[in-house]
Image (cartoon, rainbow, N blue to C red; front, top):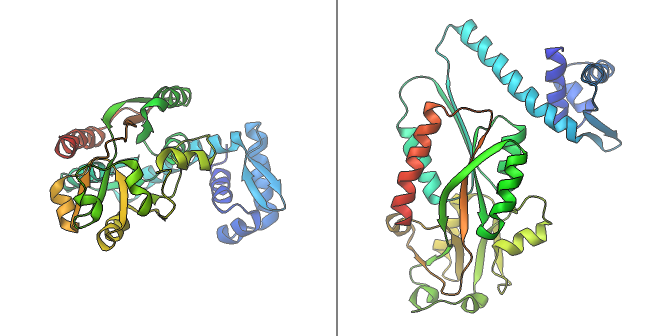
Amino acid sequence: MNIMHMRYAIEVAKIGSINRAAEKLLVAQPNLSRSIKELESVLGITIFDRSGKGMNLTPEGETFIGYAKKIIAQIDEVESIYKDGGIPKQRFSASVPRASYISEAFCAFARSLNSDPAELIYKETSSSNTIKLLTTSDYKLGIVRCAEHQENYYKEMLAEKGIDCRLLARFRYVLVVRADSKLAAMPEIKLSDLSGYIEVAHADPTVPSLPSVDAHKEALSRNVNRRIYIFDRSSQFEILSSNPDAFMWVSPVRKDFLDLYGLVQRNCVDNTTVYKDLLACRRDHSLTALDKRFISELEKSKKRNFD
């Protein structure tokens, strides 16, 4: 198998166009097309579906590109080590839900590193994206969040994809609001009390294989008709702290952190849905010293935030 052809396929998959990939790679378009066809012939699979809209990965192609990225990354690392005569980099990657206790753990983990070269990748995203990254990219660890009644579905799906998992945390979402909001002053909050307020919610769905509308319904307050959708976790606290009519469902957060933004967290008495965070790891991956250190910080942070 030609390594250069593998690099070509990765670039075409990234860009989705033979012509644009050829321009970026400084390769003639016919030569690039021929290289991809030769790679498909050697493998005996179809990597790309060709159409007028571009080059789209087939299911077999998506699996192959995942392996190819890992192979190329290892080749690049070996070349870097021996060409530069340096110390191999410590590498760590994790894809996780947006949660304060997890980001707090990652910060503590990053501070604990020694002076040796290191490369850390930390991605906050939905459960569906985490599963995709674990199966098709070079991510080794992930945290998959699901409602408790979906747990068996997730565990079966992860097992089929060669991913082991175990329970990390079990909790109910709490409401976070500004300290001077009317919601904060209520002696008891019910779901019906939220109808006149603005929900801040993460925009990407969490349930793989379900239609996006159903996935959003699983996570959102159904009696709220005003929402602000966001993708990054940092902006949620700025929005909440600036708007007394805004609220957000989150996993439990430490009081001292909320105090920084003038926020408080409150329970909702008729919110009965239990969520679980599952620590996921590819079955072909042996936990490294860095992985174990991060997991240790997760357990500590969970106790600080949830207890």
